[in-house]
Length: 262
Image (cartoon, rainbow, N blue to C red):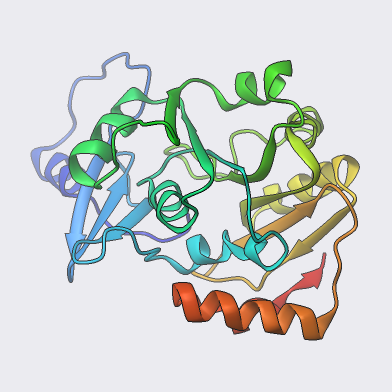
């Protein structure tokens, strides 16, 4: 994310002065709240996700809403996977909106999983929902996942927020291999960062078509990568957009007008 808000812990550390350096595996998971919205940070001002306290299953951030633009092309997914849990907003939304689908979330940091259960209303695992503590690269390279996923939602950032932590051609080829023949991947990118062009170039080697939505939050650009050529019939997409808006309240009109080839 390119949104900035000082976390409660980051502000406290600033007031208390520098602390003795410790060798830790993960950045600290920290929180802040403003106007009824709870934010997740990794010890910095960078926002890693958000939840409106009165609407815990709603997609509060516009880029997260755009990450659902695959719904224009796939109506009944069987398996939806998120790489990077964040505040579990995409995981919760997909779990509620698609009761016939399996939803899997992959998250490396165990503290993120814990805090999503305790502070962001993430349900416990059940027959449809699975949250796995593992590296996203290991997951997509596993042959057991190949040709098993309809939708892959990729939002992989660390505390430095310098672009996705996985951005190689090998990674995106592995993502494509995990998708079924008509599968779609959505990826959160930084539009005004050097990582943007690198990621798009890598995606184009792995996918048939890559489309981008307009920049939001002063930097976030969501890319849609299609394993097979998408049907871009404007009338059909507008009809589908209306259906999605009526059932989910998502701002789908903006998706149609803004969807364009890279």
